[in-house]
Length: 157
Image 1 (cartoon, rainbow, N blue to C red):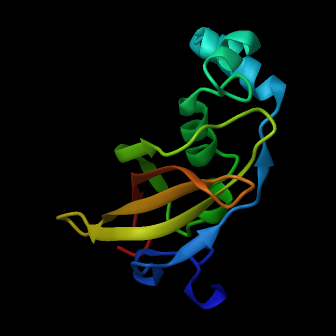
Image 2 (tube, rainbow, N blue to C red):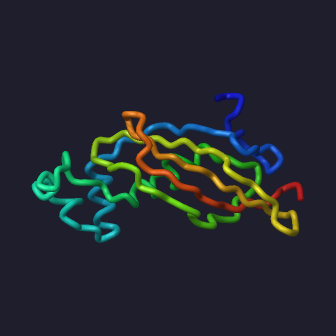
């Protein structure tokens, strides 16, 4: 994959559709799970009651799915892969995001990022990049997947 990786310190001209990079891994801890429930107020029994989770046929409480989005797109997993020579203007949102499997405390996750699309803005001074992001657990199973869109300013424009 080294020949088809997203280049570090990329510019618009260096990016190609299909380039992929893989992040480091991160294990979800009890602290991550509890802090996220406190932050979001998501105290549904499926997230915080072990007995309830067992009654529902789960191995333990589910981690909120939105934590998967947060660690995928936040500074933990994706940002080391997207080092640009051009300044980031900002995130433009998610085009899609699907939950494909559960996240549990103790799961070790990483992401695969693929350049899905790129285009210049009408003035040519900025560009938009769509990234296919796949969150993968320690068993190699894709558990979340989506397309995120961001805008960068061209330094050379």
